[in-house]
Length: 361
Image 1 (cartoon, rainbow, N blue to C red):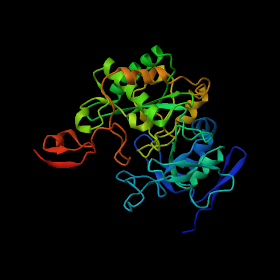
Image 2 (image 1 turned 180 degrees about the vertical axis):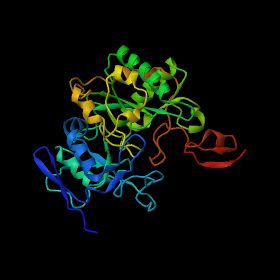
Image 3 (image 1 turned 90 degrees about the vertical axis):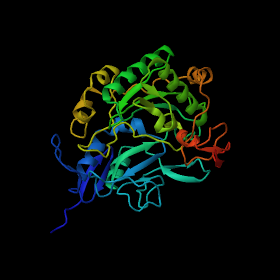
Image 4 (image 1 turned 30 degrees about the horizontal axis):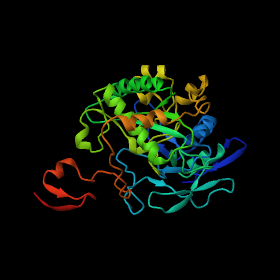
């Protein structure tokens, strides 16, 4: 069979070559046709300006699925996992075009790397050529990669909860932010959750940003019994988890206008608060529907108009009880962090301050 000729996609002022344009990336579902590699590239070109609002000048990891995504496929858990079908690309891929720019970032381990830093619409389209579906930008700009300029509130539904529960908690979050003098910008996660972003002045560290997220999460817990900040899954119950650790260094979530590896090519889509409250099924926002949805304008067009003071949320961290919470398992032990031991295992053993078992009770 003859190989399909490469296609070309116009993105801004550049034309980007797309090889194997008819490769199926998403299979058809009962609500959407199949999606090809060319269609993914054209989608990123179509949403180029609002996508760049989310990515521009930010170090960005790529979630790549070179052979497309199918039900049952798995994302690699790390660089040594050879069984994954998709993987995170944190360093600039080989063969990058000469117009691609990058920036040096530092991981929690202290190691450094050069990571893609999108500066124009052609970059996401080239990333589609490399099999990218989801962009994972840091909450920093390359002018200052150690001081975040946005807070990300990740509302993560736990087993036993549904999208209606997430919407209820998002409404509580909106009210709380407004009372604190902050403006939040919501979007669907592209799955079952909701993300709320708040632009802040780049004057605080990642650790302070994380504490602000914990403080706000505890305020949501205070206002709604269906919310939790419990790090251990066995303690969360049927509640909406505020994933505060997504505000750590080298912790990222899907950008606005990213595709997600789920049936029907769903898109992480910015909405107004009223649109979010009325949304019944986030799968309605996908590669086929979002371009028309954007005809009414990018709902995040004003997100950069004002950067806020983080102090009100840090005051919640200081005021509300609970203290420090656990960091992700691949992080070095952090000051004041509780032992990294599941609560159910604490019953059976003694643990020292570093989370090491020192004997059975």
